[in-house]
Amino acid sequence: MNQDKQAELEAALTLMPRIIRDKLDRVGIKLHLKEWQAFSLRERTQLRDAPCESASDLVAYAAMVEALVLRCTGRQPDRLASSQA
Image: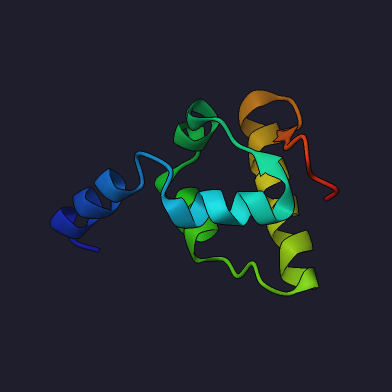
């Protein structure tokens, strides 16, 4: 990836895109901006691009987010109050 595209991608993923917030809602996880920004650009891109439709997708996506938050913060991510995930 050239530097211009890298810079564009980084700028687009500095704040949490709507698609990520929607996916997090589906899996019942509340992700704070500081947590999001602690992830590498590659990790943010993976979360953006990962499927989150089928039941198995939801389980895998939640596990990916949980592992990243645990690695970055040393604790489990917060859950949405209305979540049953």
